[in-house]
Image (cartoon, rainbow, N blue to C red; front, side, top):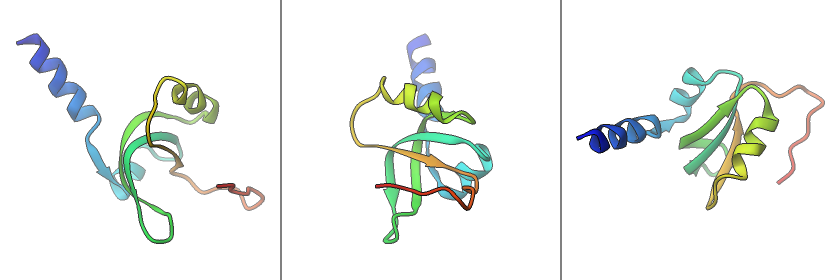
Length: 86
């Protein structure tokens, strides 16, 4: 029974969220996402949050603990002098 409860909590914690839900739940934070989906302009549509933090370095540390097709996303506005490299 305890294992089922733990698995249910894990599944709820890693629920697939829309961009709007992610921004509301994690404002101005860096996220590590899996099972993400991008639109035609490469903007995030939805994903499962593996880690979140206001400190980008924490997300980079969390990245080392996971593998697969992952995405780093910031939910706030980037400063005007910030560039993005793909």
